[in-house]
Image (cartoon, rainbow, N blue to C red):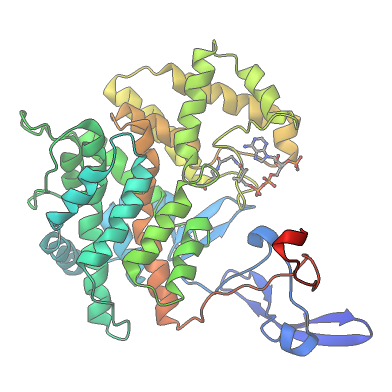
Length: 427
Ligand code: ACO
């Protein structure tokens, strides 16, 4: 097979190298396209555009494969914990015992947040959406940690990474506590990363914290499943913001805003609200299936469909099983789980969904678990952000270490041609 692709236009021929990834994905390298031909490519939504080469996450949407650094998501969700996965994503290898202990120790050393940050949080109205609060608080962290990271120093980079991994769960917990009117607390450094987070989220001022292993294990698994997903909307945002050499925290804050949208991470909240609305409307799933298929109706079946997965989302399979287990272990019977299963069954047998290869995605069942754990609906996307944090960090670090150029796409201008200015009195 030729390792060159040829483009012919207006009697000219241009050759471009074809590169191959380690899983045999092919790409036409068009770095010289514009200088050679004067043309650019146009690809709204970047459906055919590889924005970078990356060694972090591999996914095959046709086969339903997802791997972090070569390890299958099924193995990691079953056998690893979230902190190990974070280390793996960021530094490339699973940590040995000493590395993991040091990593956790270093995170615990940084797990405080400047008390002044509380004043910022207090200024938000209680009704503010937690994603807006989290994005702002992450941005505000920059002001309290103004030293820009010297990316040529592995030590400085490591320190910055550890700092955000330590402080971010505190911000997430504070966001929930503010919403619930609970005092803002700090962690307990005798606990594991996720257990500590669980305690910060749920500790009541007048009650002893009781460890809830079912909840801790469920959160750990959900965080792992959300930890990275290659060049999605929020990750691309983090990379492109970071490509201007904006700092890590500022880039993450932008990623949080990108994740908020209902077509991306915000889908988990939207799914639960949709399931609740169907339940309140008598549980008639067929009515909502018809709405989803009606092109004159803006309604979409939230939690269905994915830009890349055109077979099934492997994370959705794991989460569906986990939802059954967690609810079973907690002794909860949630009618919403039945509605979700009913919708999935109908969609998988429906020609509209089959033809368009629409399957449940990661967020179709995650909200049902969060709800069972007592996490408010508006916090679901915040939980996603906590899970995605190591992925964003890993991608930001990779982008900076590879010395990638500033992200700056081209466009095709379709506006007015040059025209004379008209004075306001004559318009
Ligand atoms: N319900 C009904 N129809 C749908 C749905 C859905 N959830 N998703 C896609 N379709 C239809 C579209 O109307 C379109 O139909 P057409 O070909 O007749 O015009 C076709 O399927 C293709 O859809 P696109 O929007 O072109 O697919 P795209 O890859 O751009 O979008 C997306 C993917 C945004 C995820 C989409 O499927 C969607 O909106 N899903 C619901 C929101 C959601 O669950 N988002 C979470 C994604 S996972 C994540 O980000 C963590």
